[in-house]
Image 1 (spheres, one colour):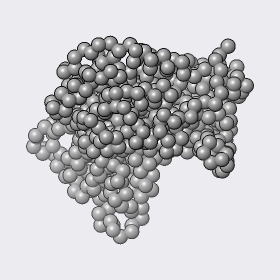
Image 2 (cartoon, one colour; image 1 turned 90 degrees about the vertical axis):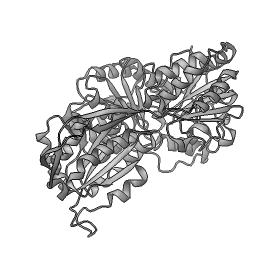
Image 3 (cartoon, one colour; image 1 turned 60 degrees about the vertical axis):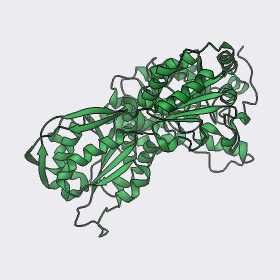
Image 4 (tube, one colour; image 1 turned 180 degrees about the vertical axis):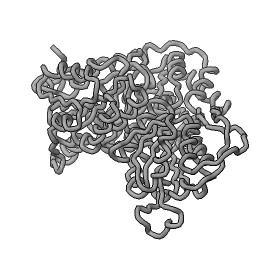
Length: 575
């Protein structure tokens, strides 16, 4: 489903300058928070902001941080995050965040300032072809050439950001247009929901396959979370008695403590999950892209299964994996349609029981390396989960710690895990966590990051302090770009090149910003440090010095099939 903004038909009764029209458009779209950084081309808009107190502005330290904050806000709320920046470098700092949102289907509206129309095309100071730059990494981009087009353009941007497969939209507005006056129509803006109805014929074919399956399995992706189809997913799974595997971005679509939860599949998914996918005879894939980190070697993916692919984006159905049935629909309406026709099938204890037993048997336990070192990463992640509130949000950066978090947080509350999946952006977690905290000021929000990604956006701790956003930033510090080092060790004959990385004294850095800094070097100090961080009313940086050369297991070798995944070399049960 998509939330679409629709104006009442009202006559124009007064005029306003373009800058105020921008603010009015955001107010009518229900926007409460704008993440941004002012500059010359956006000064008229920033001059207008104080006259629109309903709009809270969060002053960021870098425009990429603004995009990630809007991203985190959008993932947490389901409403489009809003970014506002100036021309030139203000706009050129956005694309990483835009591309991240585009690949992960996150609704966002970015308003960029532009040089005056008389200066465009003349290599003016801070002139950049914003539209040409962002078109490949957004759903759409607009250049506003008349003040009277500001209101309808911004509202169309919100429509596009939400409808169908969500994504980012850019509205580029020249400075002289924000200074010009134009009519403003009065009246409220309504919201309506558009639904893509599933084809009855395709639903019937899918139900026929599912009802006759002996080893059915469901793969839940981000589309389930976007559509809010958690209840429908659970109902279909329970009616089929089918295990549910999740993609990285699908974590949170299905409770991990449910008997049918099969865990994460793919490159760093569990061995039982990947084996179950390969043994299934019918797979219902909901809201997934079937990217390479999920499928491994495409020709070897789910070789025994007929695949039903349900997705809101027609271009994705059958794109990477051949499908027996393709269903064009959002996850919620599609699953509802399946549920309405699906008979209660006989229980399959021999199937889901085997999957559950394998998963329990493969549940990570203490290994030799973890018994020898002070702070092994997996127990650290479990300690963070144990110290945090049951309904806390966890925002993971990109790298080894991301996979450890995905594997070991074991969240039973919906949609509490947020991360950059498709683009894999280092530096994502801290600003995205600030976006989540802005959306839910009373929530407990943890950013789990590595020492490489931490140094890419660490300046946003200044934003956290200024805006009183009490995010807890846990740095799993191993002195390496850990995932790259792991690949060098395993697949490049252990030739370690340019992956050791130094860090500042994070405790002193936190103090310099006015945050709380805590250093953890010993196992016995971890729990007290986490409890101190949780109790602190402001932002915290935890520098946790983990084992330097720990690896993420299992791992599918590059170009390999999921069945060929490499498991942990040595393992022993806890005493």
